[in-house]
Image 1 (cartoon, rainbow, N blue to C red):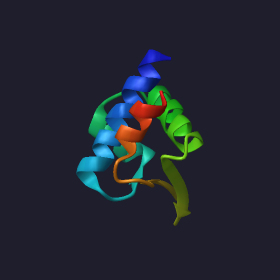
Image 2: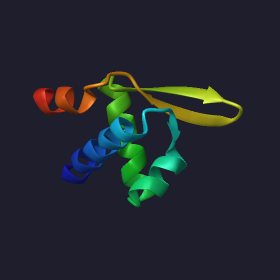
Image 3: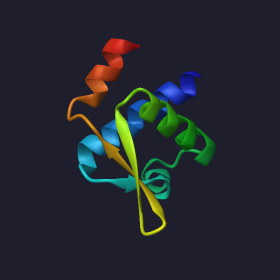
Length: 77
């Protein structure tokens, strides 16, 4: 569970830098974490309402909903 928290924070930091929708594979390439940890973290962030998912052209994109999502994550957990 600690790994998921760490990877989730890294994903939110990535969205702060990139500021555009990303696919799971793009997130994997940027972070270099395992696919399993990335997918579990993405699922958790979606469940928490910090990310949304959108399917376009056969690809699933993840979109950060809030500009200060990492701060919100730290406050709630």
